[in-house]
Length: 208
Ligand SMILES: C[S@@+](CC[C@H](N)C(=O)[O-])C[C@H]1O[C@@H](n2cnc3c(N)ncnc32)[C@H](O)[C@@H]1O
Image 1: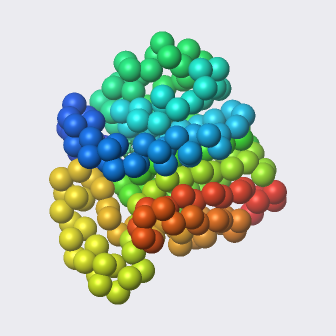
Image 2: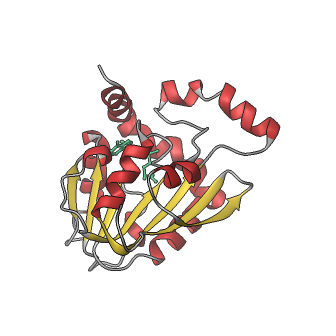
């Protein structure tokens, strides 16, 4: 089984109790950041790694939204909860590393807590760049590896625990990965220490 299949299997396995596991995050202010993230959305929108749909309640009802996830069970949860509230939304089982969309399709791409688990993050970000329109925006709410000497080292040492249980890495260098994927216009906003951040990324007008 390749890494993508392994991580997908982990999310399929935890889908039924994912919301319960994440409950403390909702009460710790994370929901306020989700709301702020979704307020920035405009135009034709792709949400990558929608999971059980935690951001969906913050979209306008008439949003032109495509929501993808490579875990069938996570996606089913989101679909079951929000099919009626978001009648224009399209839920699709898909891997961000291999997007089934034409180049230059979306005005906005949204991610939250996704690029900690995408097995090949640079490949996934390159695909997002491809499907974003020129000058389109990628907006992300992600946790990343701290640059702090001690905290960063601890995140490296203990990464194997969430990775093996959930499929989540706590030591991803998402800012660096964005640059490696070819994005250049990147704003990072620290939300909690240098660990939880917004990334506000504009797609360059000319694609490489
Ligand atoms: C930690 S959950 C976050 C879910 C949701 N975005 C949230 O904020 O609650 C990560 C999600 O990303 C999905 N995911 C991971 N790698 C993916 C990939 N390569 N393609 C599509 N979805 C992926 C997982 O299946 C899971 O649903």
